[in-house]
Length: 404
Ligand SMILES: C[S@@+](CC[C@H](N)C(=O)[O-])C[C@H]1O[C@@H](n2cnc3c(N)ncnc32)[C@H](O)[C@@H]1O
Image (cartoon, rainbow, N blue to C red):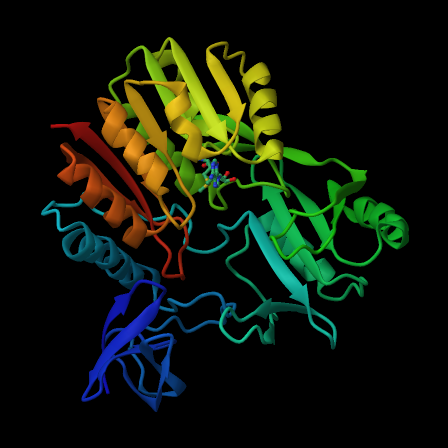
């Protein structure tokens, strides 16, 4: 069978007599075979064999997380296609997207990464479906400070379950998170790791809720770094979200700043450390930034003081409570992959801000939300895919909706 197109989740889609089959590892135009198996109501191809690969497959080694192993130029139309198709099929909004903006770096772009420790030594990637560990010998997607850390840690036998890295291109430094093991036993190795060149080492308890969601203890050195995201500098840490490709994120922030009109009050929900609030502050009298992570809010408060921004108010809380903050001229949204919660969508349709700036990392949930806002009286004024994650199917979208 021949893979027809790339679909959400990074699968190839092929059609068979039994219906559409999702193919992990098959790219559009490639001939594959395998055993179709039904899981969770969909048909997946198992034991995939690639019979006829594309001629533009990337010829050098990549980590297993790189599920779009094509030469860079060939990746971009596929990603654009994911966004265009989501708009058409899910939002049902006819709209011409602005062309995708490539990442300034196709390789060496990632400033954050996590690996499991392989039981036989070395670093490994956990396959999302089977949870099986695949050893990672090299990772050319890592930016320079992380590439140094990767090479060092590959041979360092640390008694932990996972490691997390967060680097800064601006400072040329990297923080190391040790997940699992005992913080007492890791104090000495942490000192040695800082002597070796890490800016800081933090221990975290493994938690079913996610990385850094259980107990966290700084072991040695720094816990935050300063990073440049285009027009703004911000602190980053291991503990809470910051964009992994600061050069690409910087381009998006520049364009975002130019898109919005300004006014009296702006609200940012899912704000992280409030990069957009701090950036847009000069255009508004008051900006409220709502974020659930205590650590991200703490970083935001520090950035606010460092940048001497007076009119941004951080609020640690749930986006679902947006209603209590009242009405705004602009609402900025950058939610996790699940997109907006029902309560946030209802709040927007009730309070009717003049502009909604929506940044998304999942085209399908973005399209669902855009569809609902358009049916509620908004018009999609701008949408451009951005490539924050070369060599993977992930794609970011910058969009602006205006009251029609
Ligand atoms: C994609 S990140 C965007 C962060 C920020 N705009 C940035 O670029 O750094 C999404 C953020 O939403 C936060 N978040 C997730 N669920 C939330 C909720 N229910 N209420 C408020 N914030 C939430 C996460 O902690 C994370 O910081």
